[in-house]
Image 1 (cartoon, helix red, strand yellow):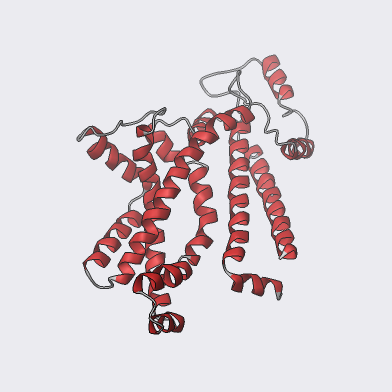
Image 2: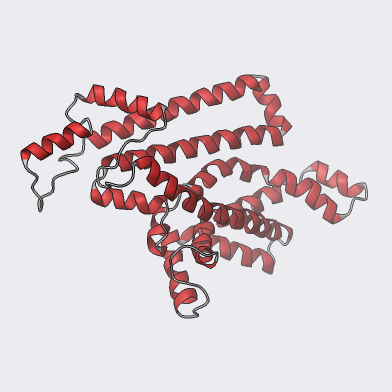
Length: 310
């Protein structure tokens, strides 16, 4: 198991390095520079000072090595547009907001998704099954920004139950959390239904029933526990996507999270902020996938034995 974890950790480091490299050279291949625009001309001497300040006057290879050293120290550099905050300070300010929103969304998805899927499987081809699958189809088919706009229009504006946007109180998080949660909720429900149907037809379930174990105990201790394993394998990507922040949802609801900083940096051509948020997001994604992969091994002994046997 230790060998497998070390192997996965090494792969994670290599993947992060590849993302840093690709992001760096892609940003430096963008035409123009972040300081001058068609509507704003900067004097040549000021431009030279700005290029020197951010190290853009040096060869790309030297800039790349400096950037790698800074990333190794978790230093994402200075923002090219903000005079008051560094990229690290912006991420430190925006990430807790995105994480708060993402954690609420993943809890909603983890509680309601598998529950809907289990109910659908237990009542296959009956009304609860049809209702659960209709909700799942809506969640998969409707993009989160459309769902967010729908919630704003029909829940916040027409019914006036909850605020349209903003941040600061729990009620501000309800609508964006549900908008974010609908897609993973629907995916979890569909996956749980198919997995549950497969598990319910296994021999060990029939054996447990023949031993006189109650239906509730069979479902909770045997069926649900084994059927939920495929969902665990999806958690790495799902959690990182939600915790790192949904760019569009945060923009729609006016939430000052990581997504808001990223969209603003794109419009402002703030290269250091774009690279910093992208690399940070990649680190969160890969770390979560690594942790979930290890957790999956601990939950299912069969996976652990397979890995150790390699």
